[in-house]
Image (cartoon, rainbow, N blue to C red):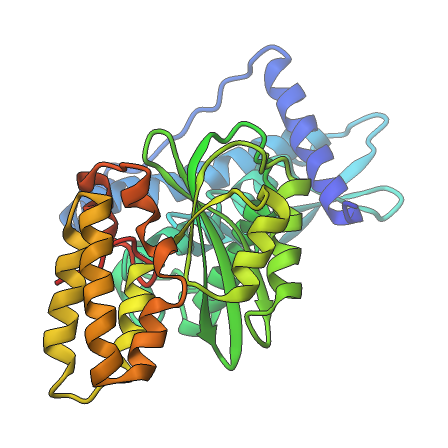
Amino acid sequence: MKKPYQIESQRAVKRLEEMAADGNPAVQMMLPMAEMVGWLRQGVGELIRQAGLQLMQLLMEEEVRELVGERSQPQPGRRANRWGKEHGYCVVMGQKVPIKRPRVRTTSDQEVRLGVYEMFHRGEPLTETVWEKLMLGLSTRKYGQAVREFTEAYGLEKSAVSEHFIEASRAKLKDMMESRLDKLRLVALLIDATPFEGQQMVAALGIGQDGRKTILGIRQGATENATVVGELLGDLVSRGLDFTEPRLYVLDGGKALTAAVKKHAGESAAIQRCQVHKRRNVLDHLTDEQKPGVAKRLNTAYALEDYAAAKQALNQLHRELMDLNPSAARSLGEGMEETLTVHRLHVPMLLIFSQRSKPRCALYPAP
């Protein structure tokens, strides 16, 4: 629900648009040559910035004139009056620049919003500008120093930038969590959890027919349990994702993930157990001296293109591990068939190898 000031702001902008369309009045700007030369000494950018501020002031004065008439001239039926000026700001290139805002009040003592100022005040989406720059690697601490275009600009402090980034992140997360998934044609769905601040963040990532990756949803829980995963997949269903379509499901091997996928996609769902997680689980049972040799054997087995050959290599390693370390052997044997799903489906090795760049859950471990 929109707040009263938001409604008034929209009305002011609409009134301005109607005023501009009515006869399309011209606005003339006069700039002293000496001032322009002074700005040019500091560069063309400074000339453009300062001329822009002058133009903003002129546009606001023109709107005031349209509302209350010329200065010091009688206006029969006057409904509003000039009421001095106050400090305001406009948003330019992701920073707040101070300007003087003319005030207008009605004869009944109500403030009249200026459409021009509302548009300047809104300006470029500040939170979006902050988001884009921080995503490119600019830190909140150095944000002001890096983007400052106006000497008098403010609102670039670390705390203010952080607030805008949080606001933009919240909006983007909301859009992502509420977007419809009906039109997505996904060949694979990757589901994995990662610890964050003592919690488990379970995320679903879809891979489309064109190879594009899309974050579908996120759920936060104390553990990677069936309830959290079930809620995540249930949300995907409610947003239009069709689990009856055949696709590959890449999981880390957790029982909760496997059970949730089979509940929604059926017992015959093609599940690919993450080979990176499998490799890590097996090696965790071994000594430092044993790890390099076993890791090399695992990598070699999964690199084989033929399903039968890869399975034979893993079974041979499993038998050897039974003598070397039964715990490691049991870890390898548990769900081993699901680590070979891409081999059984004859997925091209080039596609399997391409997943090595994906963090955490991959189809094929890097050597």
